[in-house]
Image: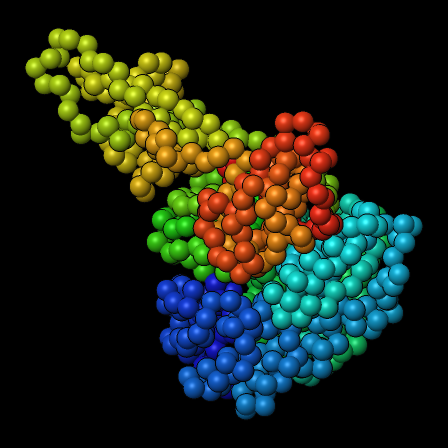
Length: 640
């Protein structure tokens, strides 16, 4: 019987596994990097072991250190979570060789299916060899791991070499394995998967379908179960193919078989030999705990004779610290306050006051809603997200709410091209126009009302805020009856709550301030000084880091004096396990270059300066350099 489990992972999945272990009376052990020294998963475990360093390769991908930590802490079992080493057969063997219980499939099954190239061969498929124009578009894909890392869509043949190179680098950084392959890219397919659960007694079960079609950068954003709109025949076929894949490798434990569905045809993608991020929707629909089932199977127990029955519909949304309106740029900083309404499930690795760093994935939490119908679950989840309190860096919360309420999603007609078609509309800023006034009135609470001069109208007070990329100036007065503003009636104002009556309707504004960051309900503002600091300006053409991260590469031949063209990739930053391309803001000459591979930079750090060319002759007369093909994720400089 398992009495103590070390989770070889971090963040929300570690916390989620700890929760089940606590319910089962199992002692928990965390591992943490230096960057995670105060992380929630390290705090809530019964014991925690430090992995020196911050980079994944030195910590959560260091299997030998994790096995030593398990032995030293007295754990008798290891759960890998997802990502990192969860699909690493050598790590599974090392755990077993140390005399520990491995809560996962046999190493042989991992080896057969964890490499997507070998999995395809096992299913009678094969990746593309020599790619020609006739094969386009194609998808470059990491053979190990998942989560959208190490994946690139290639639509032009001349982009292939660059895509292969950047995908290899990203895969090696995220998974410790740089192997990639190429397969046909199916436009506008649906991403549908089947949850598998198998024991050591020969039972293999397919626990329904999930639709994970809403994705950004090939990483899932919204998932649901069951997948809507599938015929009974197609559902049966998907279940049969998934069970076949599991039996082909003598699978044990929880796993997922993924497909692209186009029309009524299913195309096998891969088998993930681990728990999936989206497993909670299956748990909600089938009323089971998949982690508890994993532990029971690892202890040698058979699955229950009566398979669980599906009830209702569940939808999950992944909340990320990122800015979808600016090419999904990851965000960092303090998560001051995070709370969601009751009635939905919250899986998170963060608590109030935690820091969101640059070293790991940008996902803050998963919110899951379950209801008797799909429409009910979607409405419940959208409402919970809308009412959630999220004070800190920019998140994708608004995008999630709008996606869940988009007609294409509510009518179950979405596919993997959803954000390609609708991202601009979904990220269009619609801030509350009364939020700046509410912030100003809350800030003014308790200030002087000019005492004996009440018979003389006071001069308007002015406050300036940045909101949705614009500067807003608001005016208010200290009047006889309190604070006053034109066009609205101030019913109540204190430091935390402002009540305004607009056109006969009262509205409540909850206000919270953290330095210059102000949150008014779901609107985020930045308080601006009355007189801007002239020293904060940068030279025209300055490229400032749009996010904190590490400079991983500078374009070949790039040096001061080189001629560059607008949109040309100049350097690459790595942040939150993804590579992000920084391009020239204009055509001209590189007059300064401060980016050096290996250098860590903060938001707003000066990376380079491009002096814009006034006429074509200047650029033509300068020496040209070899340019790298377009690759990775393009980001505009933060300021110029």
